[in-house]
Every structure is written in C-alpha cells, then in structure tokens.
Image (cartoon, rainbow, N blue to C red; front, side, top):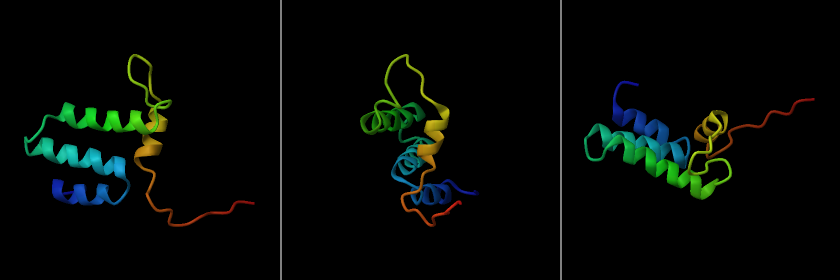
Length: 83
C-alpha cells in the first residue's frame, strides 16, 4: 500500500486488534509515540482477552495463534461446507 493512511484504513476494517496495531504504527510513524509503546498496548489487550495464548513473562507465544488472531475478520463473509 502506498500511504500509511491507506493501510491504516484497510487494517481497521479487518478486526479490533489489527486496527489497534495499525493505529499504533501510524502514531509511531508520525512520531507521536514510540513503536515499543504501540506493540506493548497490543500485547496488553491480547493478554487481557486471551491470557492462555498470550501470557506475560518468559513463556512463548505461538506465532500461528498470533497470525490467526490478527487476520481473523470481524465479519465472516462466507462459509464453506466440505463433504
């Protein structure tokens, strides 16, 4: 995507967590906050909502779980029935 404003709009439409991350990246790009604070805010929300999958401390987090959650849309557009 060509501009930060455009990717911010695109990510906002996917889900709440990706919207929060994109907004943080946008603010960091404008030098309103530092990137670490943007990431920490997302970590905090993930821990509050899904503490078993996203614990604090030295315990690792599954990259697969993170990607699944980040790109899970708010609205399901279609269902596929497999036989």
